[in-house]
Length: 483
Ligand SMILES: Cc1cc2nc3c(=O)[nH]c(=O)nc-3n(C[C@H](O)[C@H](O)[C@H](O)COP(=O)(O)OP(=O)(O)OC[C@H]3O[C@@H](n4cnc5c(N)ncnc54)[C@H](O)[C@@H]3O)c2cc1C
Ligand SMILES: *[C@@H]1O[C@H](CO)[C@@H](O)[C@H](O)[C@H]1NC(C)=O
Image 1: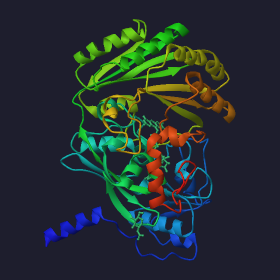
Image 2 (image 1 turned 90 degrees about the vertical axis):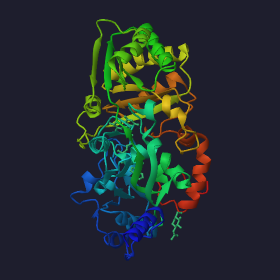
Image 3 (image 1 turned 135 degrees about the horizontal axis):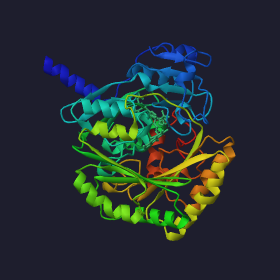
Image 4 (image 1 turned 90 degrees about the horizontal axis):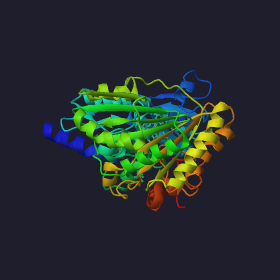
């Protein structure tokens, strides 16, 4: 009997499940209120915090924000939205750059997943996480439940929903890939309200690992975690007041080093500001090995004795992570008004490109800073284990990039000036970008289909047509069925 029960449970977990048989009502409002989660509309007290997103520049007013408490609440809510032809978007951590989690326009239905807080890890490091979980909670939780780790970003407040849907890059990514590379299954709700668990080999698994919100509401991700590193070196070297020539040489030294034969356990990023070049990262190994690896990098970049230097090592992975990320239990969102773009390059920049880039930063962008427009640029190495996954294994296609640039400007009074400041950063490097990172989503990107998805876009369109023909899961960059 016990055996039969557990078999039934396994079967239920991998097969499609119909939505609960709740009444569809005579209006969307009546329909939604048949499920258990809170149903919030403009004017309700909790509505504003439920629709809050990190980028205060892109705030939208959904018709409803539903806060499901279970899978069946999600199923019923999606069924209601389909019945009344209202667009559905899912919100996990609210850290998307363009407000797409709350529709990217007014009047949609937002599923706020914040109550879906399941987090279990088995003895083999298989993690089941509800999409209400934030990165800090994920890292801390899996470390506490057996010493496990997963690759992903450094901001604890980012939600796993969006982060996994579009990538998930961080200190462990050269060693272990993106967070979406660690997904083995996803529990999803389709436009018709049916739920299913999809895994490797399924079309929908391909679609959700790179483009989830166009296809389904994801209620849970399953990840294969790995043992947390036994020792972590954390480093930061700050260089200030460099000339244009020195800055160009520093960047060239960095990119050539990262393009060389270095261990995947080594990760170094560059953060650029108006008058600063910061080199920071981690090494997952011993301090002695780190010293040997980093020496030629410091020489190539031109780090000097008088520069800021901060190097430390920790046996406890979470202690190390906290140095970069701050308090992992924090879920507080501190909204800011910003605009961001990304650019991925497969090759090192040419010397002409580097001169043009740093010329722009030293003069145009510094002038903008003096006018009150703050900005920074982060350059991440996208090689290492990321390249070990084939381009068509997941809809996220970028498997041959060397660098990803994130251009970020904030707090300026005039939106058009923010746009032209950031556009100018990209244009100073290239006017024909090859690829962009979908987790740094840019609502103004013209060829987003090609830049985000490359050759995988055709297959995505076919799957969209099959599973969401009425385009229920729609937002400005969702793609349309049958195109
Ligand atoms: C301060 C800050 C730091 C960051 N640092 C990093 C970093 O180090 N590395 C990195 O790779 N990225 C980083 N990012 C980018 C981040 O990965 C993306 O913005 C990510 O999409 C945010 O996920 P979210 O769930 O918090 O956002 P949301 O705004 O809730 O969602 C973003 C998108 O994902 C969709 N989505 C969310 N949940 C679901 C779900 N359950 N089912 C289907 N679709 C869903 C939404 O509809 C929306 O389109 C950072 C962003 C910020 C603001
Ligand atoms: C609901 O949609 C999914 C995805 O397209 C499909 O597999 C399933 O058969 C549909 N269920 C019903 C009852 O139509």
